[in-house]
Image (tube, rainbow, N blue to C red; front, top):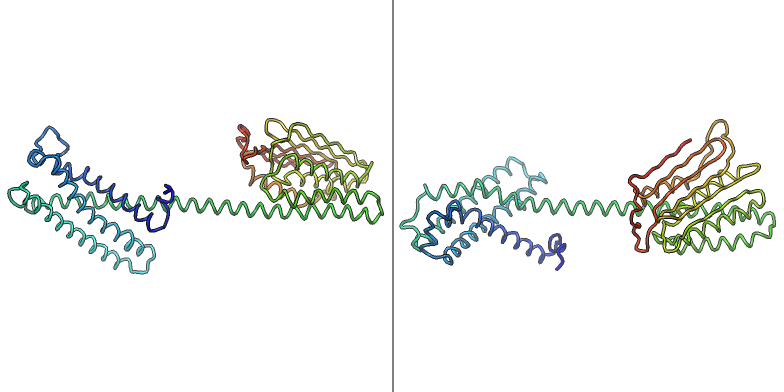
Length: 397
């Protein structure tokens, strides 16, 4: 039996075991804190008179204490179950008038107290028959102990039971909230990836289509590279993490497609440094920046378009630095960006909340991106010492 099932499972067998453990613990607690210092060792003074032990011995005294404790625990069980499962739900649901419910609660507690007094009468009668008392004690003796139990033990047992129930409910609610948050994040990530795929493919197909219109002999080569990109997207990108080697290979293929499209007009610089083997990263995390540099930069330049991309892998971090020139603002307004950058920013916030930094700067002549993101190991965890103290995100216009 797992501890979690024992504490939180709703199965009947686990609930019965939980309640048995709780009432066993309460029975022992009641005996130690109330009965023993009341009857057996008054005020826990072992130097004082111990008449019960001296007269009946330790074994009989223990039996009497446990018997009294069990009888009182039965009364406490009736009190707790009545309040927790009848009156408390009634107050919460408000199906019954609260004044009526309060009156019924007072009558219920009074009935429990009367049963408790009869219980005292029974135990003192047995003790008198055993010879502990010469005659049956009167109300002046029994009543004080009875009132003391009502004042101190009733609130204690109700408080203990209610605390356990509320703590369990709070823990379950927290787990449900965390599960809902994880499901929400997962759904958001799936939506973002679903947006990246068609957006990226749409631009690439447009490029190939233009080559077919011009009867270019480079079109078959572009289709071959595109098939590799599709294979990567359809097969590997279903996983939350992919090998960094495959992600970088996809970047190279995409840049090759763009280089074929622009030919000698494009001044392209690509440098990848470091060891990618055994490192993992979220799929399609880099391509939106690269795609944005061509779509909103190079494609709009009438002359001398250039793109610089440097990727460094060091100390289990990936450093991504991309810059490109762009046409000046039109009528003082910034050129529109696609959905790719917004998506990748959101994905970084969801996937790398404390393990990334991102800086985007843009002016009238060029556009620059610097990103640093922690890489994952084969077990899906961050490498040691790769969590940043705070994510740094800056966008300057």
